[in-house]
Length: 457
Image 1: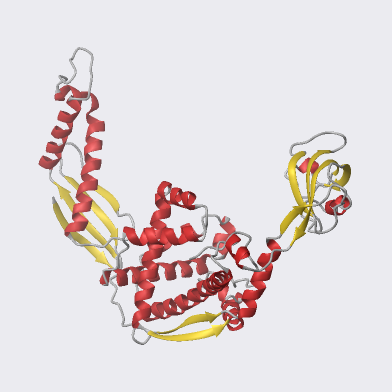
Image 2: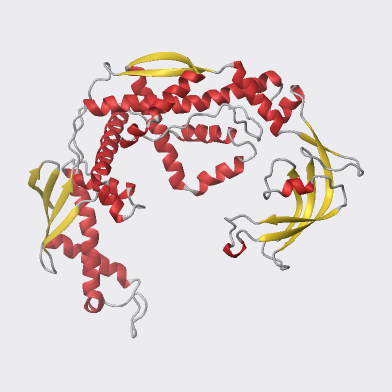
C-alpha cells in the first residue's frame, strides 16, 4: 500500500492511496478458499466446489466484497500512518479499480483542529455556598406534616365533613350507559381538596359508612375519549369507610416514618436536600462563567461537517421553516458546543483524566439514594441501556474536567443566603440570556415538600 498527501488546505486533507493488484488478488484467493467450505453446488460434495467455479458464478459480488473490506482496512491504516485526528467520517473517491488492476482512491478527510491550551491562571469565577435558614426548614417540616396526615376510622354513626377521607367504590354512567373507566374500587378522597371532579367532594359531605349515594358530575374537557368530554355523568357511590384526619406530631417517631433516625437528623437531611437543589443551580452558573472565559481565550477553526452534524441533531424535531428562521443562531450555538467540547476533551487528555468503573458505580449509588426503594429499577436501567451508561460516563468525565479547571483558576468562595441565591438564579434565567447557549436553571422551591421518605445522600 502506498499513501501520499495529495493536498492539504485548512482542515481538509486529501490522501492518495494505491493498493497493488497482487495484494488484491491474494485477498480474492483467500476469500475464494473460505467460500469453498461454505458454498454448496449440485454435483459437488460439500467443501469440494472448485474455486474457479465459485468465481465464475459469484465473481462480481466476491470482488465487491473484497474491495469493500480492503477500503475499510487500508483507509484506517492510511489515517494511522499519517497520524491524523479525523473529524467525522472520511469520504472515499475511487479513481481506478477492477480485476487485474491496482486499486487507486482518494481519501478526503476533515481534521480536528490543533488545540493549544491557554493558561487558566487568569480565569475568575465564584464558587457559592448557600446557608439555609431555619425558618425555611420549619416551613418544609410543616408541609411534610400536612402531607403525611394519619387517618383513623370514624364511628359508623358519624358523617363525613371537609377534611375527612372517604373511601368508596363507584359505578358511573353517561346517558344511562357504561363507558371505559366507568368503575372504580377503593377510591380514597380527602374532602375539600377537589382532586377528583369539580364539585364531587362537596356532594360527599354528610355520607356515612355503608351509604349508597348518587352524585352528579361533569367529565373534564380534556377527557381521553373525546366523545365523553364535558358529559354529564351519574356516579353511584358505595361508601366503604369514613375516616377523620389527625395531623402527625413533629417528633422522633414522625422522623422515623420519613426515613430518619430522629428529628435532628430529619432537619439535617432537609437542610442538605434544599442546599443541594440550590447548589445544583448555582454550580451551573459557575460552570458557564468558566466556560465562557475558556471559549473567549481560545481561537479554533472548526470543520464544517461537525457543525452541520451538530445543527442537524439540535434541529431534528423542528419544522423546515423554523430551521431556516433560526439557522444563523443555531450554527452559532453549534460552534460553541463543538469548540468547548474539543477544548475540554483536550484538557482531559493532557491531564490523563479517566472515568473508572468505580466512578460509575459511585454515581449510580448516589442516584439510588435519592430514590429509596427503587434500587433494582435504577440498576436494571443502566444494565439494559449501554447508551445511558455511556452518557453517565461522559457526565462524570466533564465534572472531573471542570473540577480540575476550578483547582487552577482564581476561585472566589462566597457564602450567600437563599434570597441572594434566588436573585442570582433569576438573573441568570432572564429572557435576554436565552439567545445564547444557556440551559435554564430551575430555582429550588424551598416551600415544596416531597411526600416520599427523605433519604440520606
